[in-house]
Length: 163
Image (cartoon, rainbow, N blue to C red; front, top):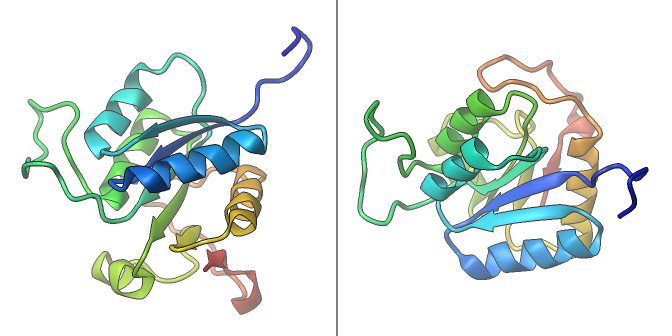
């Protein structure tokens, strides 16, 4: 990359299934993105805090089972949390961060977290390369919306639901 070129967007991938992390990483790097990846929320929060460059997008599994249950507390800066809580905490650290949630059982997972389709960009697993790349491109083209802020209602044909 030469001095005049812009840095590619950086994407942080979080999934407890490392083959998914590696697959997403390969697809996204091939498309020209800079990619960071991890299999846990604790490490993801550490990356959000300590990474010197930008992180433009968080692509996280909704269900991130903690390796050894750990309750989030003030004394633990990097707790193990589910994907939605990770997204909330990560956007507190990096306010311009965009979010894509993913899951293999979207309806059940989303309902269990009180999320409606179309509220946040979502990628249902399994997915194809082109669906992942289209959603990432679309989400990166839009401004970040802080979590906890009500988003405008979308038209039925405008929902960002891939899968």
